[in-house]
Image 1 (cartoon, rainbow, N blue to C red):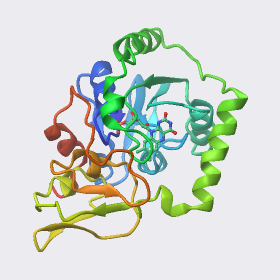
Image 2 (cartoon, rainbow, N blue to C red; image 1 turned 90 degrees about the vertical axis):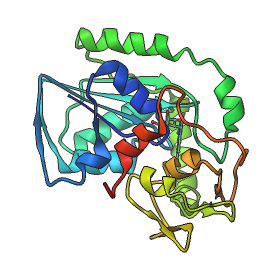
Image 3 (cartoon, rainbow, N blue to C red; image 1 turned 90 degrees about the horizontal axis):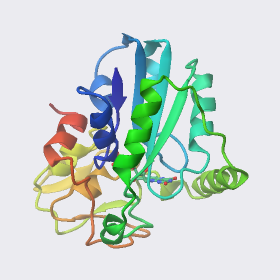
Length: 255
Ligand SMILES: Cc1cc2nc3c(=O)[nH]c(=O)nc-3n(C[C@H](O)[C@H](O)[C@H](O)COP(=O)(O)O)c2cc1C
């Protein structure tokens, strides 16, 4: 059994290589508390500032897993910092014992810092990384990579930046521009249903959000931008192997 959360398709792409029927976390969160039991249970999700996304942690907190082998696959773009070690410790606090954590480096979709046109040009040899993970999972490898001191320092620095300037990574940065035509794609890809169409334009219910950037990256008009920094507002990203319909099916809260 494999669960996933994705904003731009990287984690779904990886999940689809590992399982015929990966299950979407935002869809499962609509249900009441569930208990999952399987020979092995895994989660594929992105790294956000060195940590698993909040929505994934809410899922882990809510659900109960019964398995002999629990694993996490973290997708990231440039620096995984100490995310495997940190995630393992975090899950322990939630009563989940993790046997294996693997990481896959793909396009970095963090729009404030990276230019998606440049990112798409970098060959990160994704399929080779996935083969390594497949082999680890088929032998039920037990391994939590130990972080380097640099990795721990980077994570601490990013977390500290977030504490000093919470609006930086909490969604206050996201702005809908006049280019919006009210197509509603953003509302359908938002994993918490925070966007809706009002008077022919996208609007938000709350100031803060998961800051997964599904809305900005999947907007066909490129009409959702970052207030503070947006490396290239004309360049957006969705994994080349994943369709918009798949992101909608994964995240849509109104279906
Ligand atoms: C808010 C945010 C924070 C991120 N933080 C990191 C990070 O700390 N390290 C990193 O390498 N990539 C980071 N990324 C990049 C994503 O982890 C990466 O692109 C991931 O594969 C996206 O997965 P998805 O397409 O399934 O959403 C971040 C992306 C976002 C939106």
